[in-house]
Amino acid sequence: MGVFDASKLPPTCIQNVTFHYYYEPNVDNMTEDCLHLNLWVPYSRNSTQLKPIIIFIHGGALNVGSSNMKVYDGTNLAKFGDVIIANISNELDKDNARSFGGDPNHIVLMGESAGGHDYFRTSYIPTHKRHDQESNNAKVAQQRFL
Image 1 (spheres, rainbow, N blue to C red):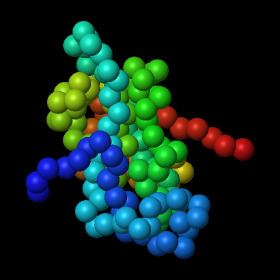
Image 2 (cartoon, rainbow, N blue to C red; image 1 turned 120 degrees about the horizontal axis):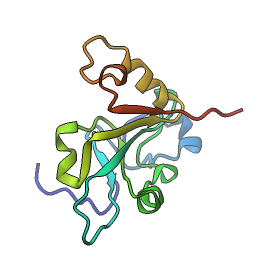
Image 3 (cartoon, rainbow, N blue to C red; image 1 turned 90 degrees about the horizontal axis):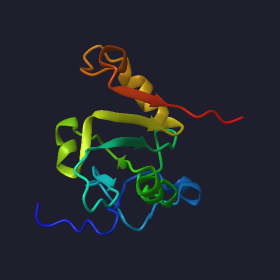
Image 4 (cartoon, rainbow, N blue to C red; image 1 turned 90 degrees about the vertical axis):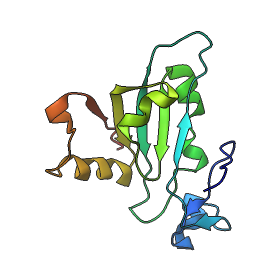
């Protein structure tokens, strides 16, 4: 395992480079070791209050794209929205939310394009433990484009 340098984004997952001109993954820096969680946590000098978490799943037709793309940088939303942004390549464990100041009972899952579809598919798995209709702890954010 070793030490991971969290001051820069990790490599992109291996994918079809045919679409690299559109999705801009760093095709020279792809790896199978790509299941990382990118976090943007707003700085609070004195606050001990847990912050809401927005988990964002990137789009890409379920084939391409990366949570490491510049367009998905959560810096400004975390800073001005006073929320924690989690940009995932895999998943966020609710049990670990408190370790970075997040409120495990206030998590919003949202996605763009295929990322939104990922939530939709997951929410209908019968064994899913915390479906929003059962727990009222999760909310879905959806944006429509004309």
